[in-house]
Image 1 (tube, rainbow, N blue to C red):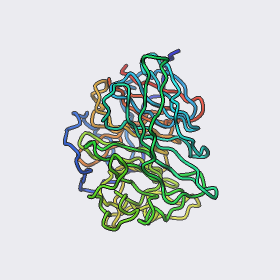
Image 2 (tube, rainbow, N blue to C red):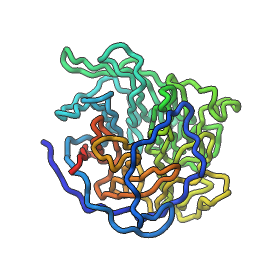
Image 3 (cartoon, helix red, strand yellow):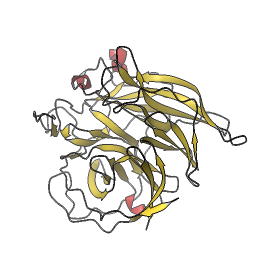
Image 4 (cartoon, one colour):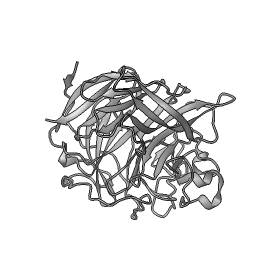
Length: 408
């Protein structure tokens, strides 16, 4: 049964910010676009600096509980609906009907190494090259076990088959791994494995966490702590920035990342990544070709033992975040909003916060990102925009709610 709920009043987030790098270098093949006409920024809102701000206006949406899932991690709308796919970290892929809230378990999913932050991860629809209306190509990420108690994230490509004429079964066919973290390591943290299809429909991007090992983020001989760029079949694009170095370096688009748990493109083709910092220093980054984002040599946070990490400063050779938070909010899924239901949000990023227990709105203006709204909720793992402009949120953990946001 659907249940409408109310949340606490809206507050503008009063955390610190930092200016973005002045130049924008979108992924190759990215189209132009205006991203809609965003609402004016409040005159009291601090822009990329410290300070407090007055509360936002009244809550502009109604929250409806639609369904519940077991440790959901990601959601992807299939074409224009009515179906969406939802991953559950223990290993199930769910075909969800967005109108009647019915569910089907998709068969043919891979075995996953479940535990800690490991398990079934992202799901993203692939550019459709099939001729059948019941066949939907997709990308799926998960954590697989290796030898000697190691594990690592992988990305696979498969076809989703929906049988609308028979018993309504759904299955994955022709699942093939096209990328994997190298090397696999012990431990259960910082896999990242978010996926985004580029606007040119010719490339995919993948976040690869540094597995809580710090140094791999700066080592181009491994693909940990990086943002990866591949062709749709997993092969290496000839124009990747480090392709001349060969080996794993050829996969890398950017480096110096910790744990990227959100990835999305805006209407102008710019790639945005949400990233968990250490103790403080959570970030949203505009991802640019060949840039080094500093970790663990630069961060606006510190190590968990309070050992200092040098802050981002101008001229340090690293790309500074477009927005950052200390104390941490633990940013997770991120989505670009260009929908019809909330015209005042067009040209914004919507960000889920785990420890921050909130939905955060950040407005894009030019190459800068402005913190605008902070709506207290539960732990928000995933944000997705529906075909009609409604916003869908997945809470985190067992028995987590799927929430639908519509205008008041």
